[in-house]
Image (cartoon, rainbow, N blue to C red; front, side):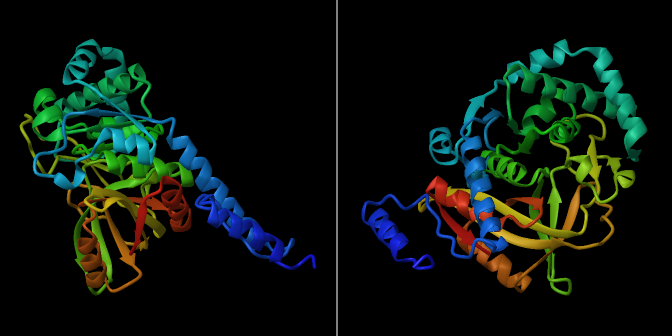
Length: 346
């Protein structure tokens, strides 16, 4: 009758035989079953994000940081499998933008930093250099119509401009442009995906340590994150940078933590098995930020934390991770299917 699935079975069986089924999903329920519509909405959102990624442009300046083979990428494969196009930006473009920045814009951003954030261990010259590079980065994004920017800071932009790119990275993220350092192209694609799914800017972090008592991971950023996703915007510190790769002065780094609540963790790896997506979930704990000169999160995971780390290392995912507010694991799974790549749930 009207409730019988046999008619649909004829279609699904035919689609399977003809290898047409890979982009379809089956949802079973009644017309007044809200869960059915929620499932359809998730898949529709995932499909929309997948198609949206095809139109995105990532600017990449500098090569992957030496020795970080986990980040190496093939720009053609990135376009074919994940969607975005990669445009290589020469350092000369940055130098030209640096030389041509409007001093009025630099002064405006300098004043904003002084007014908006708490500051320790750096002086005005550190803030000024960071503000100047931030304006140059903004102009690069506008010049090449970029949706995301990936750069190598160490021995590259930091040495050339004698400051970190962290203020520029944070300001771009606040304005919807995803940013990653150390040449992590796959990471910035995950950030774009998470941003499109949730509306929130993800945290760009590293697997730093773990706490068995809390059953949590300590995740630390590369000196920056979107200030609007801080736990308390009034408690954002600007500090000296923990690492110096050739600049003068004390650098520039953000220090804060995220709001407590559920999060989704993700990344990609392209290895001998092909491209795979990491999909994981956790919860940012309601704890004060650590005073370490970095954005830092403590994320409780769903399985024993040592087992979690063992699985992560076994599957060979990179040493960076993208963390976004909300649980979008199912949507990421749909997107991986549309991309035609394998996925690993941890």
